Amino acid sequence: MSDSPPDDIVRRPWWVKVLGFLLLAQTLSIALPLQRFAWTRTNVPFIRLFAAVLAVLAVATLFGLWTQKGWAPWAVLSVATLKLVADIMAWALDVTPGLALASAAVNVVIIALAFRYELGAGAGVTRAMRIFFASVLVLAAWVGFWGFLAPLRVDKALPFLVPPLHARILGAMYWSGAVFMLASLSAKKWDEIRVITPMVAIWTGMLGIVSLLHLGLFSWALSQTWIWFGAYLVFPAMAAWITWRQRFQDTEAEGPAIPAA
Image 1 (cartoon, helix red, strand yellow):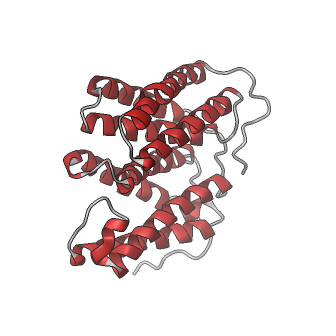
Image 2: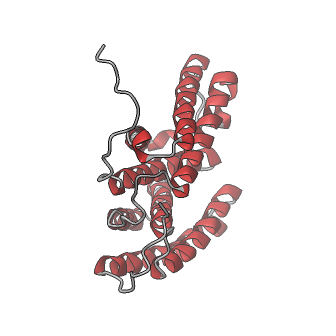
């Protein structure tokens, strides 16, 4: 089923208006404090690239939200979770920690309001879902490659270096996740992946929580740190949202029943 909203949606409900207001506030935050920090207080190219891309994405999301595009909820979740990464950085580096905490709270509200979007729910696997699964696949395969095949250089993919045994165990785990995502890409019906998607939300969400408990171990001068927190905030939010909007799709999968043994 398409991710496009129904044609008869004209009036914007109250929560869309609130969502738009909060997103506008975050867009201004991205356009002013974040850009100023990226271009005047650091010379790290990746931070500047992150800030520039996020600003463009935020403006595009405002347009998509106001015109009620089918991709709007995906974009809203992306902007809110990526802005959370910047907020975590500001908190960890003690850069306007009060503003960072307030911004993080706004982002949490934005994510909660985004869960009111239930457009495009259906029995099939949509193109947007496949793009999401492909994104998780790419990251899992990348970390799996360095962890399993080049454990002494695992910090090419991770924001920290771990002993070779640990790196290979992590590589094997990430490759197993890549296999799940590859299988999800080939699925045509939701009932084939309705267990895998919440697994993604739980696994990546727990990694995100654990990472928040150890912020002192991460260097924000590394692109790997930004990718790490981006992945473990964006992925659980999107996987949870997909699972939530598909919650009424509970048809039984076709095929023979699993033997009792």
